[in-house]
Amino acid sequence: MIGELLFMGGNPVYILEPLVRTVVTAVLAGLMHRRTGALFGLMAMQVVSLAGFTISAGLGLLPQLSFTPTLTGLLTGVALPAAILVLCLQEWNAGRRARAAQ
Image 1 (cartoon, rainbow, N blue to C red):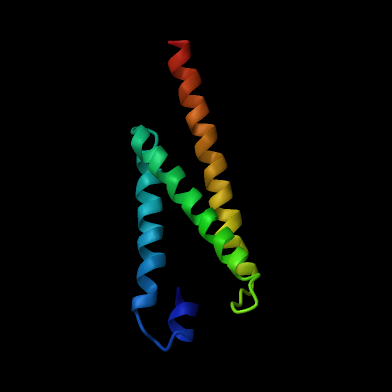
Image 2: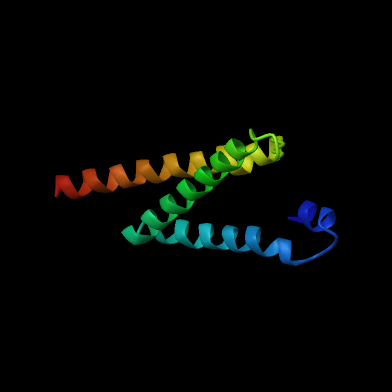
């Protein structure tokens, strides 16, 4: 967030999206053990993140547009959402098995 703030001319508007995304992810992760909707919301948010990165990378193949993948972008746009999605799917499967065992 600080890097975006510095490179975008000091405009604090660029901090809002990562900050809101972090807070929503933390809240949904805290609620996912008690609420199935929070689990699905968290999974949907990660799928949207992965789809957005894929679309950006795909559009970057066009000669008119430029897409420069960075290590930070790959970690926050691909690795982190994929890891969270895997953990959410494991939690969902564990919950399904627990309900089936009852």
